[in-house]
Picture 1 (cartoon, one colour):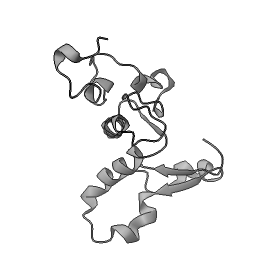
Picture 2 (cartoon, one colour):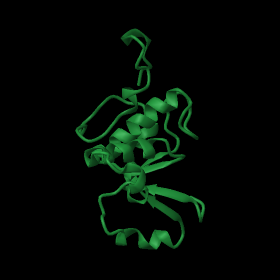
Picture 3 (cartoon, one colour):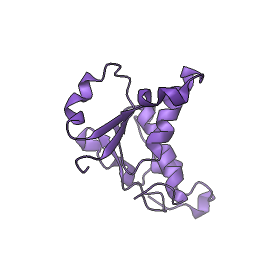
Length: 140
């Protein structure tokens, strides 16, 4: 990510100290920066709003075992099928969605069957070939 780029951070870190080193290099934005636009909105919706914003980003970096990150990637998968997500292909391969730790970095580029642990992740099979019958699906 280029220095000076704007980065939206969805986090439950309330004081922001954790992100201080990044603020020296990037233009960081948090949902709290837009609280004037959210006035009167039920705070229970804030997490969902963060997910939608993150899902429409040019690139996304999430946590592998996070259901929050997983849903963002599912949205990015749906968007990629319609050419909505910048930089991701229109065949459902998420080129600009990444996971931490490094061993799972490219997990969303791999088309494979659902496997354990599956409780807090998404698989490209959830959005690719979603409108096809079983006989039309890509074999993995």
